[in-house]
Image (cartoon, rainbow, N blue to C red; front, side, top):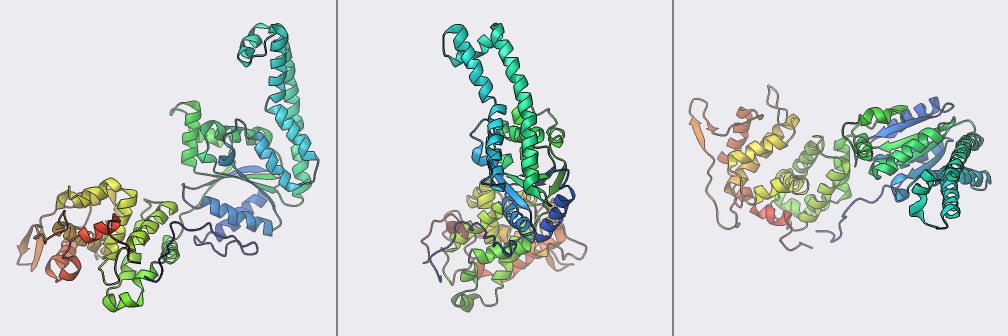
Length: 481
């Protein structure tokens, strides 16, 4: 190997001030342009936009890039990471503190913060506790609820404070509206709220309620970067019922929803291939002396793209698989066979489906059971071919080679196991027809692929079955550094 250092994860993407999408590997600059137009359309009235995407879909990175792009185009922006403050009961002061960024030296923000504190009930609670002590002679929080129910004087004071809070809410909204208008000039303020779906349910709902009831003002656009499905789960958790229509509830707070489209996974996989330094192994000049015509890079990349495009995984998950595959690859020598397509597929299952991986590792499944299981867990779109048998042809050959290698794999890794795959010779067609039953796979194409591995001489590559690869995926060998 050229280097003993590899990455365990990719570093946070740098967002250059002058060219924020310079390092964008997901080709989302066009999306930012579209969203900027939408923000401009709703600038005067204000609105709440949901930027929806699955966990690991790159929302936070996109927000950082888009935020800088907005700044470059004359917008003022704010950013609130809700997850960082969900240990508090009420997000209001945390959100108000972000407003300070619009005009750090303005004294108006202190007045706004003061009213926010009163809205949060601190004045009310303090006054009520004082009346409890006056009525009972005891300074005890536990007596507060009882005292409020039984003391007419406290009830009167409570209503008085409630009326004061209603007035404070109106005053708060007016002050915030003026403060935002003074700083918005010709373009609206864009207030990003990130990681909301990761917060505890009570805090997540509190953020939504505060935005709806206190920040429903002109010249400010709220962008909620969320995983809508998970936020809906949080709403149901807040109300303690799965019967509540959480999507309908969420519509009360969101004016427009935009879902991030899935990026070009071929571009992203090529990026991860380079980022994690796979070229240092597969394209090493010493290795090329042994495997110059084996098309290892093409085989490896084709499998990574096929799996990534299957919609089974998000960006963060596929990155984890790349990172693990690169670590395990450090145990292979320059002249070792890797079988790149099978290797990546097994690494994928090791990370994403360890129970299935372990069943392959310990040979708990028959050949037929393994094939049937693969057909169940791989997306159907990867298994269906066309009438010319060209679509997904590479996947068919990968599955066939995996079945072939699995068949001759010994549990202890020693000795050579005889093939047990059963077939019937069709002399008319001059080919072997295997006894496998397929659920989705085209049987003729699968037989063709399996024939190729069973009839051709691949002894160098497959004589050890999968044991050689398993030991390295499970990190049981010394690293070649």
